[in-house]
Amino acid sequence: MLVKSTPQTPRALWAVLMLLGLSAGLYAMFLAVDYRWNWSGVWKYRAQFGIGWLTTLGLSLAAMLVSVLLGFVLMLGCRARREPLRMLSGGVVVLVRGSPLLVQLLIGYYIIAEALHLGQPMLVGIVLLGAFHAAYLAEIFRGAVESIGASQLEAARAVGFDKAQTYRFVIIPQALRRALPGTTGQLVSLLKDSSLLSVIGIEELVQKVKVMNAASYAPLEGYLPLAAAYLIVTLPLAHLARRLERRFAYET
Image 1 (cartoon, rainbow, N blue to C red):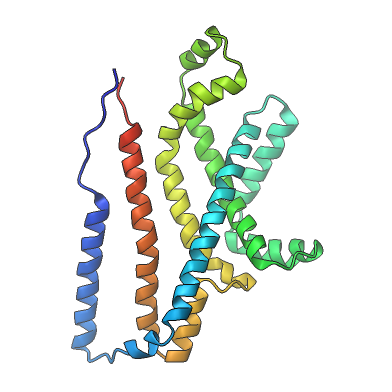
Image 2: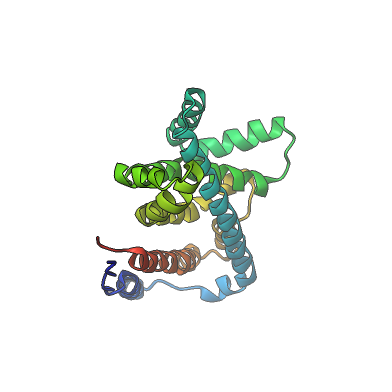
């Protein structure tokens, strides 16, 4: 019999309240030191801010799709029966996880993409960002799959399931619930790491804010909306993940 876990107070609400309190405190502090706010200078570039935000969302969503699909493929490769495939998949995971994203972006775009004559920075950025986080998702997926008890696999074989059916009906439904927290955290990190795509010429949100700050001479007024823009996306994503965890949670 399945027993659903009781819902708890959303931590996202507390995070929003803490953010509002911190913002009010910082605002009062700058008023005390007679800081001259220049919101009018920033408001002139609101259209560019919106374009940068939409660009970041589009790049992040596409990279999330790439990372989940590629991470699942790498997980299957790491669990393959053939040793060359396991070594190849494991080597890719270790190599990607062992080097910084910034280095991979620079090498991937200015060396590999140039050699292949790929002059589309957005496409290259999506692939590189997705591949970087796919290596981490592959380990999260592998840990979730390997946490399934051997009795589950024996029961699947007993009813005549082949390998594909075992994954579809037995392993994946249970592993999905166990991998959900780690996957959500990794996707949130992917969204924040999209700010590094400016090094290969993509004018995403952070790059737009830098240009806006340089033109308006108001760095603080630009970075506060920048932080809010990321929180507008990451907080609902974390809240959705917790709702899914409660929905799939059960006790035996």
